[in-house]
Amino acid sequence: MKRGKQVKCSIYGLTMNELTEWFLEQGEKKFRATQVWEWLYQKRVQSFAEMTNLSKTVIAKLTDAFVINPLNQVIVQEAQDGTVKYLFQLPDKHMIETVMMPQEYGVSVCVTTQVGCNIGCTFCASGILKKQRDLTAGEIVAQIMLVQHYLDEKGQGNRVSHIVVMGIGEPFDNYNNVMNFLHVVNDAKGLAIGARHITVSTSGLVPKIKEFADNGLQVNLAISLHAPNNDVRTSIMRINRTFPIEKLMDAVDYYLEKTNRRITFEYIMLSHVNDRVEHAQQLADLLKDKKKLTYVNLIPYNPVSEHDQYARSSRNDVMKFYDVLKKNGVNCVIRKEYGTDIDAACGQLRSKQMKQSTTN
Image (cartoon, rainbow, N blue to C red):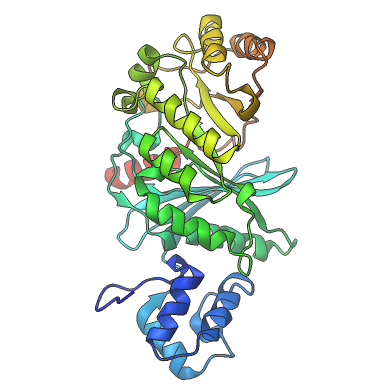
């Protein structure tokens, strides 16, 4: 892992094995990696100088090679229900969003994996701004750490217990960095966030779904489906042109056979687009041989000004859709909404801030 001369990266981006290897390359003992790991993730210090059981020489080496936190907090929005939305600035001045959601079972954080998105879903605020670059593993981990620092400052003893990788970007389009992120936050000697408390969402990158199945990490998988047939899905999700539902379901079958783990299908309810009773029956038929290991999450749509051709499905239409699925034995739920009094849709806060910057 020779790094040579380069811009300092975040130490959060190194797995435990990589950090151990780095110390060995520096002529240091491997136990130094354990010490630093504990300072970062258990004691959660924010500077190398606070690592008091390290020598000045070791601290100097770390300071020369790494930064800890690569993010700058720009905006924090707190909703009445306890949801907190953060706008962070990266070292290259790009903006990303992160959301903390208090749940009955703990604290869940939704992280961003890319600056912008190239998937091109026509209803989504995240894709309004095209992908500029992938986030590094360190930049993804830093989102969790800054939320944890926020919780620590509250002094109530809360910790991040669950993670959803569903923020701006397509996680499987940044596969290697996302996988390193998962290994860091899952490490038992660090944040120790259980793999089964982590969910990664993809819009349907078929080869990566299969690679993820082969990886063996017990992280949950969610698929942004949003339509039960190719005509509707292609009209709202450009990725369906490359990976139509037949190919996607083939990858789903591979994943289920390989892992025997349940998949969640995300389904945003768009009025008069994908919310009719016949769509519900088509979805039930699509999943009929997978019902034991699939789960449908019906999601109320958060309107986006740039996509004014879409509207939220009525409560009545959502319930009719839900009833058809339940009658067909499909496990499903209507997702509870969070942060409805702030910029709720993923990408909205970032988009608003960038508009303000260009008009000022």
